Length: 304
Image (cartoon, rainbow, N blue to C red; front, side, top):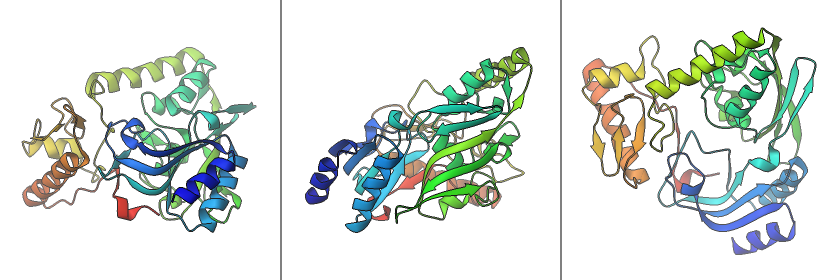
């Protein structure tokens, strides 16, 4: 792995770090070290890095702001590709927006709402990046990315950059084809509508205020932990099971919103996974409902 690290450094693709703790790169503030962490300076740099990674047959994983990720305490094997500030760009052409995968989703929604662009109001308060939002088909308040994504440019391990249409992305509830295929979102094109600026800004503010008032963002967390087993809601099932406030080690089920697990005292990944398993067991026994996680749980042996 050290040889791969040196090769990536020599390729001058951007920041390259050895054994960097991923607790620095997840909103839960949890996670052991990545063997190698890279932050490519752009799509060409990412292609160059991917060619090296593939040629060396090294496990890899792409992350954005780590807002939907639980990383094992032992870290992640191989290379972690962080799409951050170096891939945070935005271009406008009429009502279509081309945004880099590293662009903050909240920031993008805020900027466009102030221009009176409608279609991203649901994003008010949703953390993460554009790339992560496409990957997860992020959504809220009855809308999601499938409503506005025209296409996305994704990079495959063989170095090919492919444009996938909305239909080819195969969006469904909190999923896309990208959760089955090995590819990295590089940028997305979104189709928005012209709206009344005051109405759009007010709608955004309403969604942000709702999240601020109902969700525990005063502690490190990763948003909703479980997918809603429609027509039921995960938070309601957990609360009705008497699990609000349930604690294991430094992690606790939020008393403000039962579908949030918060890091209250230097929690480890094992604390969070213990709570997740307890919730799954309890809800299954009480309601016969299988609770599936919305957050992605990454164990060291699973990378790649």
